[in-house]
Image (cartoon, rainbow, N blue to C red; front, side):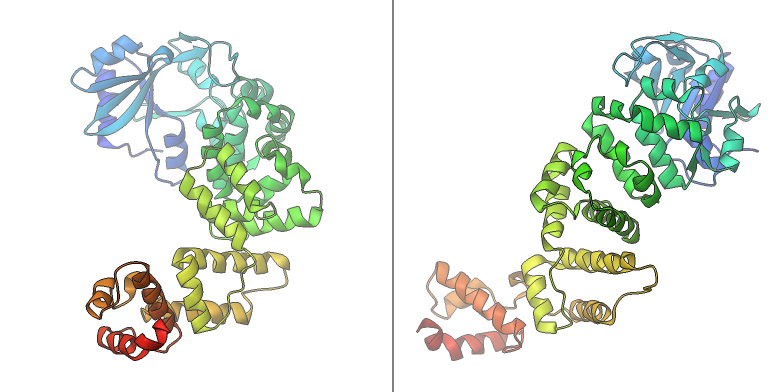
Length: 415
């Protein structure tokens, strides 16, 4: 099999080769290409030592991002390529990073330190795919399997536990039995992992085929969301897992469906603990608060809801209710008629460009001043009054009509 390598990466491989060093693309880029996916990034492994990498790539900017572990980031035509010397890792006293590394001239030894067989694949054009641990077979069988002894791999780096689950969910792979047992046995190691790293892996996992993973590996998620332990009603947990997968694979929606059995306050605490940004936290908390909000097929009512909560929130609530309905009963297909009618009406309201916010009102504070309304809070109150009139259909959202309406109600309004 021949892998198409971007020209920037080809140039790195060629320069290392011309300098007398072995060099291969390695890891996820090889895995994804074999699976027919577009790699997010390209990593290179080489027999060259760090100083030899710099010499071979003279002319490129080399950033010593992980020089203590033999890694340099090479900028080639503005494309970053990580280049790492073959290495053997020492002891992992923090269950995350090796205390030391020892460089080696053996590609197989370098591949043997990697997490999963499907990530322990290397390739160059001269030799093709190098597979020392059965990664190709595991790709064919859609299996996640540790390289070597699972307990050792997870004790080296606890984040690998969550990475295994993320790969399984995103790629829709099964997890090999020994690897699965190792995950459950060692899951407490996640308590030692930075919350930001858990956030990244967990979010990607949730946006994959997450239901089966949440069901089988619940003890793993309890390590960083201990509140899950208090969901003692099996039916509630089953429904939660089903709705997570039933809703669109969007981080906001999936996190909301996972946390909706908690209070809005608790949901916020969980997300802050996992270092989500304030925008994500505020949106999820708001959706958890509003999950029971009725969404009627009534134009005036929808305009009021749009005014109060905004288009983005309402669209999310419709998606949540559809997922909730879908997950309630496998025999139920599609959305209930009332929900479909309400969503169709929302689309109609938005397509027609009906006014539901002050920024769209075709009359401004300066217009009211010219009509003799005094500067101050009175202007704001009258604008809100006019917006209500427009949403209620009492006055068209047209400048002249609004001016006429103000004049007609001016005395009455002041009374």
